Length: 181
Image (cartoon, rainbow, N blue to C red; front, side, top):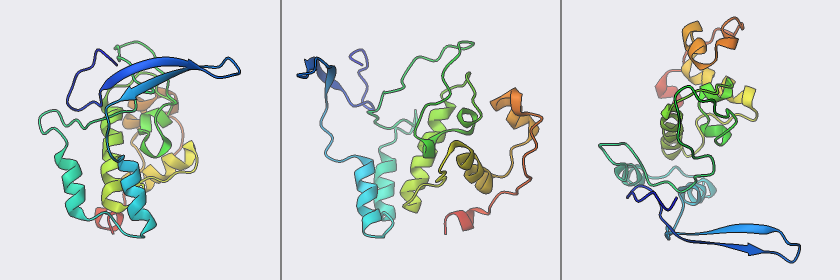
């Protein structure tokens, strides 16, 4: 993380190790101060049973770099350099923000999984709740299909060829005006 110096990434100021009285070793990261996380702001409005005002959504979205479409991020728990042809793990990312190819168990993917996650965050900002609130991986896929429709055989093949013969229920996409209602 020290090698990353970018305006859209929360900077690492210092790191150190500490131990407990049971000889457990912990890595401590001292990060750039950010007064509130987006998660806390969303929960504030959820507790008040309100949607975040559109002006605030716009303010958050204006923080997205218009050229690179990047936002300031902090969680690098699963960060790695993606190498074409090199296998990755498919069980990453919080469920509500997990791209369909990850749910299908893809081990080769691109940064498009991050774009999917960012879109899910934007939808949550606008709706005041997750767009795809699945309770399990299978339910997550069902929630995605209910909004976007059943993926085509070609889309499934691109996500994970092992599922191309699986018979998915044929569901049509939900109209966006209903999704955003």
